[in-house]
Length: 338
Image 1 (spheres, rainbow, N blue to C red):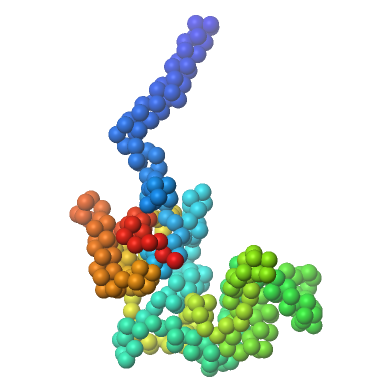
Image 2 (cartoon, one colour):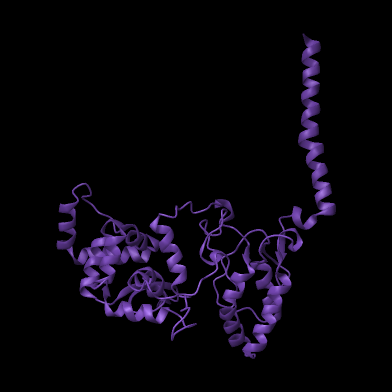
């Protein structure tokens, strides 16, 4: 009996040493010797010599002077890698794509070919009618309750604004509670739809936008303002404008500009996507550096083409560029965007 136990024990020790010590140590030695960059997370240093991120993980670049990555369902959080998992029939997917398109969509043909659609979205919104009926904001909230509720939940300032409105309009809240007896103490998100209905009736052609300003104490404070133009109008109501203008021809946008990846962390974008963003990047870089836009465009386009690659060394697939590497290359050529 002891002979079998001793042999089993020795086999266990041998297995542990092989799998938990020798094998990992061998991999570490090989990795650090022959593949140090990859085995240490493919970390990239910035112009100051400090690590700025991994070549394998997307970052949320938002300044106009940078190329932007694909949208992320994981908010670019490497610990929460995930896709949106939204079906094509889910309106939340259509809304997210529409919000990305609103500020950048351009006319494909006609007298305004090449021009942005956004100014016309703003003009249509100010007129205050959707499919011939007044109250665009109220119709938006009624048609898509979840979007109205999401607006309230997006920022604590939004929720505080709705709570202040509820205190100032007890009659409307009381009526809502009577119609929804299962929720005797409604939260701000519960009142989102009725709030926007009341707001739309009192403020036709207006929407609400949050702006961060410096308060009297020097600290940032978020203020909710009424607006009839700007990015919030262009993105939130682009889809409704499109429904009111179904015959308008709009130029196609690269798919990966508006769609998330399976991981939500894809560090690359297609070369087509990068070239689509090129005018915005060139405009910002030329303005900051005070250089000729044509010269800046030629330089940045060369950077893109130099960094572009495709699978199997170009034998298959579409060309793509790594967003972090390209943006760092631009920072080396020009100062960081303001």
